[in-house]
Length: 410
Length: 201
Image (cartoon, rainbow over all chains, first blue to last red; front, side, top):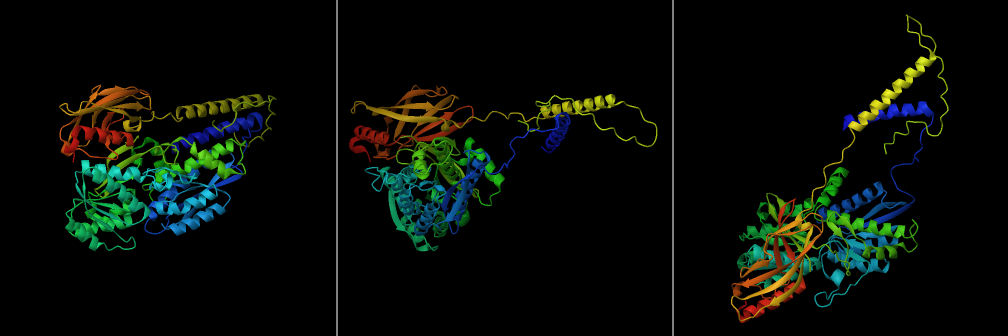
């Protein structure tokens, strides 16, 4: 590489000298800086937990959105537009998320928001964004009600036109886990635990319903306090229940210690969770006892997708300190969906942003379709991702290993 | 675009001004060159330099990389449930049939090596039999006969039953589950109910 640069420089100098000698002038290729694209700045907001227990996932989201804007700027993907991000920390709390939504709405340069991580936070932000006609694309919210309404099991009804997501819903994730646990892991007696939050309780419910339908037995249920790290009482109940598997609806800061304490109580059975526990931090928190625990997560493993190779390489090249984690690819695709929508709006308006750009971006988002990091990215009539893949992972050798992938085609 | 700039003069073909006469250096003997000779030598040198540089650039130019690897077969193949046909419920062995359609997105053909399902009480036979080839960008209908061996080991009302498929293309052989959706789940439950009656768990 170095040698080639040297040759190129020599060649350039020689040819440059000849040009100067020959005509005494040089071609003016327009000059200007190669950074920055134009006069209009479009801000993509990011809302995620950037501090606290869930920050590993949140920072992966933020960095991945940042990467998407850098690539778009470098490629001058939308002529005349430079993208920037404004990242706000919701600390995983619904009330903070709502304040952040208000703050992002107030910034007129914000034409789209990526986030949040937690379904409960997403729920608190939806109305604020929808009233301002500001598009929101979550890479991680999985609660079905966010797109299909609270009565999604009986009558699907989209509550907010401005809300989209690239993640698959728990309406699929819970049953997917149940199918795997019952049919393939051959576990018949489950103890179900959740953290009482929108995501955790919802996921536990969809798992439980399918597990029972398959013929499995629920031998116990418990709710934990997410503020606590002492789950010894619950662990003892699990031990005494005779369960051969634990299903946990919640996130890794609690799931890690819970898994560890269940094994310490004498129940050497796997803990199974959803995408909320699919993090390297779960493995750290559960320790060696976590080997054999399972998680389902949305999408195919990013590393297995040829389309993701470039993302992984670019992420590495940018030198972000934190890993892209479970939602990196989905966050990049969420940001790119906003970039695509902005591009469409600008191109439809003679290369400029219209006055009602936010509303136009919401409309354009519905028809966005491109090959992203995670596969084909587009949205159905509810704002859900049309790409509905899920994967089962297990803790093996101190890392997550892929067990099985499935695609929802119904 | 190299960014080097034009080698030939662009629009201005006036002869170059002669270079200023260099002061005669002091010292020993030297070959006497006329202005014309010096100009020709300089032009020859620059031409050779430009040609050498061009050749080097050509030889060391970035070559197009190898073609991208084809995607994994599960990423280019889709299965859709079409309909269920329940046969005579008194017949033995107890069986029913459903039809699915498989599609491949890319130009690369995919071979379906096997179709199965995870329930212990059921076995499947497909028509056409596996392995079956689906050409790139094409689709095929597959009729799947489900034989019920043990009603005690079938799901009563699975919400999202899997269909497990083994696929192969030039990239990989891969086992993948397809979740065919609510219609398949409902029709499967009905068919099992008819086949097993009260024997179902």
